[in-house]
Image 1 (tube, one colour):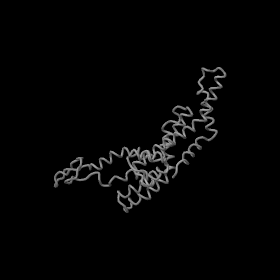
Image 2: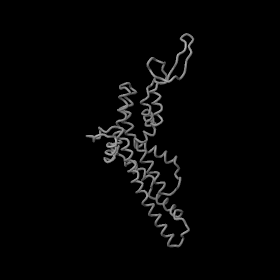
Image 3: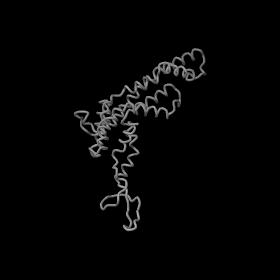
Image 4: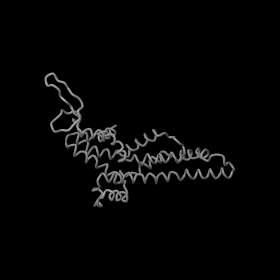
Length: 253
C-alpha cells in the first residue's frame, strides 16, 4: 500500500494544491468556470487556470509515460511471447498478464519508488522544498534506473537525433533523450528473451511434426498434439517461477 501511495503521489506532484478554482484577477488568463451571486458583493466569477488545464490534460498521458519509465515494458512483452510460444491462444487472458506485470513491476521498482519518495515527495510534503525543486529530485531515481538498463548504442542514436553533442557522463543525459533510449533498449532485451523462450517449444513442435509425418498422419494438426507436451514441460520445470525470477533479476536497481 505504501508503494502504491508513493506512486500516486508522484503522479500528482506537479499539481498545485490551490490552483483549481481562483477568482478572476486582472492580467491572469483563465477559462470561466462558474459565477457566484453574492447578496452584498454582486457577481464573482471563478476561472480555471490555463496552466492547470494543461496539466490536467497531460495527466491522461502520465500513466503511459510512467509505464515507459519502469520495468513494465520488458515484462509484458516477454509474457506475451511466452503465451505465443506455448500456443495457448488467449490463455492466460490479457487481464491476468497485465495484473502480473504490474505487480512484478512494483516489486522491481520498489527501490526506485523509495528513493523518489525520500528525495522528492517527502521533503515537498514536509514543506522543506518547493514543487520546482521536488520534481527533479523525484525524477532523478527514475532517470538513473533507465540509464542503467540502456545500451550505449541506443543512447548515442537518440543523442544524434536530438542534435546534441556526446555527453561527458551519463549524469548529463537529459530526460528527453534517456526515455526513448531506454524504451528502445527494453524492446531489444525483451525480444532477445522472447527468442530464448521460443527455442524449447519450437523443438517440441518440430519433433511432433516429424513424428506425425513419419506415421503418415498428415491431416492431424501438430499444434494439437504438441500443446499438451509444451504445457507439461513448462509445468515440470516450474516455468512461472523460473521466468518471473529471471525477469526480476534482469534489471539493475
